[in-house]
Amino acid sequence: MRILLVEDDLSLADGLRTAFRREGFTTNHVTSGNQALEAIRTDTPELVILDLGLPDMDGLDVLQQLHEHKNPPLVLVLTARNTTEDKVTGLDHGADDYLAKPFEMTELLARLRALDRRTNTTQTTMITIGSVALDATTHEVSVNDRVIELTRREFMLLKSLMETPGRILSREQLE
Image (cartoon, rainbow, N blue to C red; front, side, top):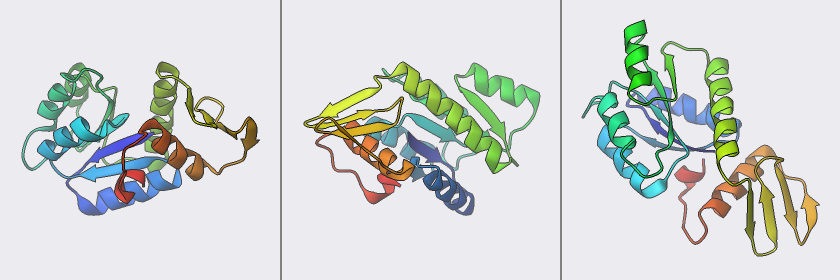
């Protein structure tokens, strides 16, 4: 799954990116609302992890603008705003999930896996380019009709590349 992480706390963002990479997720990181909106236009992530306290605009404004896109990504709000009213507001503004800081990494990763399952059920599960076929549901890859074994990380890298044929992806986009 391709994740856009919108977080202005650089040390937290580094820790999250490391954890996501270990889970096999591809993560792009930006630190402001305007950067997030631009990244969504150009990179088409499947999931946005959105902090609401951004330096240039409120994350709720970013959330509303995200849902103006033709195919908006899933959004998990990850923020210090932790009252019930904050959570209800975030979910009512279009967030698919909401997790308040501080949080346990195991819970965040479980929520990401759950959202990943949702994206896999709503999208085509089979990608074929030439003689390479990738099944996102069973996590099988075959070349010339012969199944090959890949690690989770290798599978996620191949999936990212096959989902964006003809595009050059930076190392940051693939991590």
